[in-house]
Image (cartoon, rainbow, N blue to C red; front, side):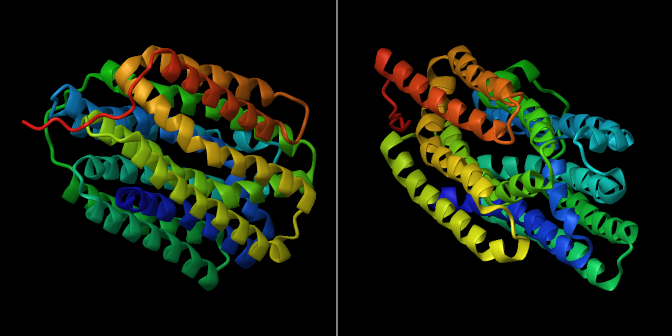
Length: 393
């Protein structure tokens, strides 16, 4: 439970700080800025895809392939790829905002800011991933806290001092960049560039292809939902804001199970017991946030309740199927695990094109149920033992 909370704490800071920032920017500068979070939300899955290969995959490779150069190589190559992709998006930012059915004049400056911060977040996450696999969670907590405090304070303080969006964003980016550069020099040890990218993809293929699918899901799903008008944009944005942090923190369940299974020391019952405690905390926090913030943003309660209810139910069952899927991925069949995940993601992609403002929520529900049923079927059919006792000597 300790590791779940520590890794979850890093994710909490990383996720809640920008969310709180968008809330306050909506109050200090322009109420429409709260929607920027949903505008650039699909792009986070580009970052997650890169992190999957060059962060998670590279770190597992150091254990499974005994490649001591994999971590440094992953950080270097992942950073370059991230810079190229996000740079292309920034150069075409007007087209992107228009594609998402939103106003370029209102959102352009902070959309560019958010994308640059995503790149800095990628650098941070690649470094933190290294620390997790070295069991250096305290240092990871410290770096994560510093990054998010600097990011948040520079943004909000400048918003109080001036209303010039360009000055605000430039100061915040400069401050955060200096910290990330110094942090990486202290954390990352320079080695040779040597990495087996195919193995890095294989070790986290389930989640890699999942992130690519989610990019499509939210890119077209949000575009679809936003086409129904302002109240659906606000309801979707608000629902995403009060559940996204919880989903990010819940990712600690996957991280801990991956580490323990990779190191051959895993107990399914203990892992699920701890995961459920975390889930209860996250569901409670979502409800509290929604109740507290409702009077401020005055969103449509019925629309928002439908979206949030599906999110919370899916959160509850997530640890059950994701833990089993991780086991199947690393210990039984990476191909079967990946195919299962991709079938579920295909359902979500197809649902994103349903002419309904709830298209992404419908896709989430169908995806969660299908994964729950499939993983249970694989485990029972092959009589897989989910416990891996540590072998000494």
